[in-house]
Length: 87
Image 1 (cartoon, rainbow, N blue to C red):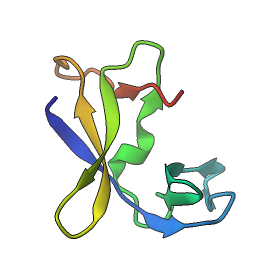
Image 2 (image 1 turned 60 degrees about the horizontal axis):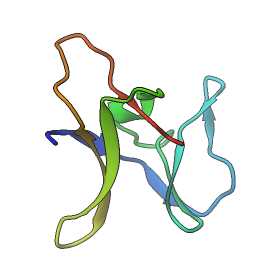
Image 3 (image 1 turned 135 degrees about the horizontal axis):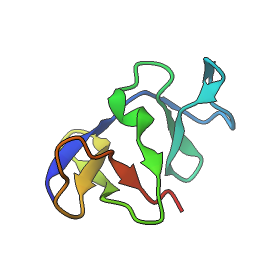
């Protein structure tokens, strides 16, 4: 699918993310390693969950380090919300 954006933030092994405005933006990367988007996170931290997603998260290696990347699983219309299945 087409590239949408990177899920960025601080790599951590904490069990809980830092709360910003009552929200926690933490995503498991591998094992107990997580990305906490409350610190230095991109707009991708606002992507919501859906049982009918239009995107997915993949791990991508750039040749120097690993990234979490959102890619489209189908054509996304202008103005349509990006949704993934965090299941």
